[in-house]
Length: 103
Image (cartoon, rainbow, N blue to C red; front, side, top):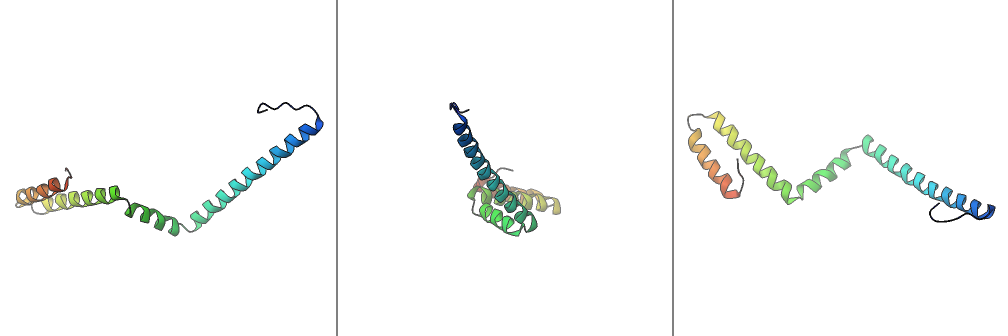
């Protein structure tokens, strides 16, 4: 029992009391976490807003989003006008390479 030896009945009762207090702390923590989870499930808007805000403030996410947008635009324009696609592809490819994005 965690290196403690229980010598008598009083020590046993003290150990039980400490364990009950510890259990109560864990139960309270679990109850609070469940209440927070229920609040999030009932109204996910604040959670979503907070998550989007965190993503928007991430430089890596913004860089990836810009790259994905440019690749999407390149793909769209190249399919839209096949006759001019080689010109547009070369212009957009050059732009992507200059920005450090590879197709």
